[in-house]
Length: 559
Image (cartoon, rainbow, N blue to C red):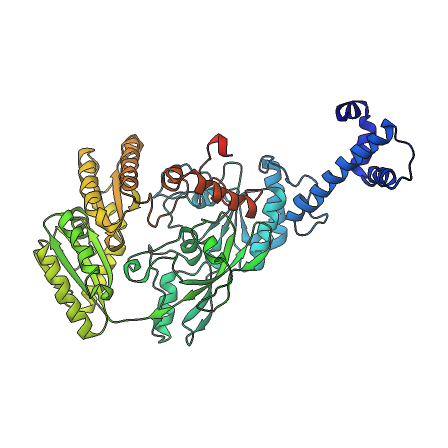
């Protein structure tokens, strides 16, 4: 009967019913109340079409349009509420005009050279595209305006600040994207010394925060220490860690107490309060840690601080990397393991690169080495050093020694933090491909041994450095030109496969971005990735927040 009704019903009748579904609904009410004695097919037509129209109208009004908070004429009639393509070039131009009107021309940049620079990293070789426009907000309110324009025109939007990411996180989208340069939002908004926290904008650098605290004589610091130049927003996005992770953990610990986030809807949320602990449901702060800017743009953060503890830096040399790495877990599981703030592995090639980089005042021994940072009172450091010295000697160390002065200690640690620069400087004319993996610490000696052999067999110049206390290491592979990239890419792929086979992860701290999303289903399973997509589609149904990053395509049967 339904098919007969739909075939007989004229389109010129259907159209006004969809425009004014109340017409059909009145027929439904009349029929159900018995006010109409006409039970002919004509009335059934109104009943059927009225019901369809009412349901359709309600779905559009309550579900799709609810995504746009304003519900007003500021949303163009062509605003994408269906899976249509992203903004066309003409629509991108109109969106850019709106951005200028909303924020002022000085904050909206369209110079082609700048657009290419903002969408590209010299240290990443994944597909890139220039952005269509770069916008420099000064406040959360500015970011809301940018997101609202992006949503109205369905224009992809990518946050940018420190530009230290290595997996293509801030590359542009081919159809034309908005790059939100957060580097100007770098203010420290409040310091609560008595509570041990600081509130800052997302563009603040972790080094600047710690320097500011030291200048004010506040004996606290923020312990997450990724690469130089990293900013708080990017550290949240990639779930960063650093050399201090063996003692203080990563971004996924409790170092971010609260985030202010602009959602794809243009709404502003705070994920928690400043309390050190809370049992208020699931942790919405962690929803954005590691999300790589795909769920919203972080504009402010409350950071938990920790006391500055006296430290001493020491170094030990070993005959091979396996012996060096195997000593680490024994040290950390000893009674004095809690006094080890950092333990870093640098292979012989890395030590040689440091010597050649003119970054040291005197040459370092060229052998596989461990750098230690021990913390505590002088008595605690002395006891820890005695334990570390005995264990390293048992594993074949030829030397264990402290830095003679504070200046030497700072220099040693600076050399570790600038390992990438030293590696590049060691071979003029070469370019670096940097990747990282992480495995259970007991599996690290095997992984390091197999990786060094693989790189040597492949003829790839490389250095290896690692946060070996938590099983994480980086391979910095060098190549001369693009003809050598397939060899480098294949070696990187084999490294990830080895890590996954050892129950590890494809990345310990660099993040997924474009470069490693192909490994996510193998590592996490299709069901977990499908859950990630469910969250993404719920928060960002138009997929405008950093599309093309993090989430791999699902198998057809799960889409």
